[in-house]
Amino acid sequence: MTPRLSVPHVLMLLGALGLFFGNANPLLHLPLVALLYPAALVLLARESFPFRRGWICGLAGASASLYWISWAAHDYGAFPWPLAVPCAVLPGVWVGLWGGLFCLVLSRFFRMGNAGPLRRALAAGLLWYLLEWMRGWAATGFPWLTLGSAQAPWPLLIQGASLIGDYGLSGLFAAAACLAAELICSRASSVPMRAGERAGALVALMLIVSFVAGYGIWRLKSLPLRDPLAAAGMESSLSLALVQGNVPQDIKWEPAFQEHTVDKYLELSVAALAAGEKGAGGVDLVVWPETAMPFYFQLGGELPARLREFARNKGVWLLFGGPARKENSPGGGDFSRDSSLRNRAFLLNPEGMPESSYDKSHLVPFGEYIPPFLDLPIFEPLLQGVGGFSPGEEGPLPVVRNGKGDSFRLGMLICYEAIFPEIAREHVARGADVLINISNDGWYGRSSAPAQHLYLSVMRAVEQGRWLARGTNTGLTAVSDPGGRLWLLGGGSPESGSGLFEDAWLRGSIWPERERSVYFHLHPLLPALALSLLLLIFFTAKRKQRG
Image 1 (cartoon, rainbow, N blue to C red):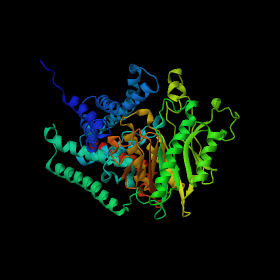
Image 2: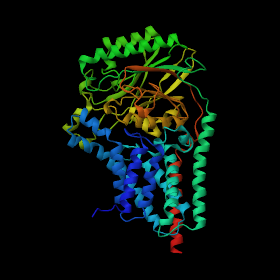
Image 3: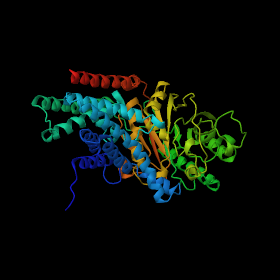
């Protein structure tokens, strides 16, 4: 006799599939399918064992979506596959935990039995927002696989992030998924909706859809549609060249290849500048990615001198990533034993002199540092010979000027920092009028990690209403406008892997934006407001239950 899947098992499967196919993946990315995940969790909250089943549902979907972590552990950490596979499962356990908590809290609310579908949907949306927000800072934070960023391939759907942020937009989508799930399953429920409740839920769902689509259409039309690839040197723009060196990770830090790396970046940069001179105008800023230079620029010598010479001879600003040491730290010139290493973005001015720098503040656990309680020799290969980094301290924002003398304050986001809304907002609060994201996703091969990372970065542009230029070592290199519209190296889509692992450059322009978005102003208030509303709904339902 063939065993039959129970309703909870079907829901868990649908939720996991929604999480996988709703985010960028190697098979088929269907953004709206991501809503199956909260919809399944809402229905699982009505079943027995809600926490366990919600956790397993999220664990399965998140582990599948984060498969690329195992890829990096195997290829660059020298982990055998039996040890590499759990490297994706462990963050899947963490992401799934929040799905379990969502189910558990909703199950307690649903058991009161006196809250209608509108209150249930509002509670689900507020709870989802709070859990994504908490996941963004708990245990150093891992706000990956958000419902909002899953919709980034369709800019129309993510404009609401300029009002309520990525997490708030996720909560809105979760509320819509809750309403849709209840409407679809109400007739099969043991407690079906009354006609009035059904009509109210349908109207509420239509209002959410109308708001998301209507506001998206309005905002995209209100933003100037500028082509950054065809407008160099115009309208007080900053013309830049994003150089993608495509330096292999497994040889990057070997001293014998340092000169080869510098040669490669200089040759690509010269080609980008020459193309600019033949086209619409020159280039103001050349951007090399995170840790593009695998040596200590502060120590001086022949290789740093070549970088200064390039900037001086070409008359351009040069922004590049590399390891550094905190100024005035002990240890003299012995960087190999220094405990004050930084992941830094250096800025050279057109005279070839160091102008300023930015140190990465939010580091990647198990990549740039090992948490003290897991400081084991087995993790040492993941450091790739660079050593453990320490977070940087707040300093002045880098400032560059274009050929017309207009100044641009750069909100720097080094790699992982682009997934945290708070960091981009802090830069805008300090005057950033453009965002620059330098990254290195070369660890993850031709997986879906670069696309997932790019979409998370795009949310920062929409939230803060800023142009964003993203320069990477192996791709995806791109420019986004404040509406999340992408111009990608290679001209394809992120899911197609356009421009991945190519020696290439992307030349374009970005414009300064100085107005602050609604979300910028609401950001500090949203968590407290969401929690207050959720508690109000809960205690109101509790009081009615007692009455």
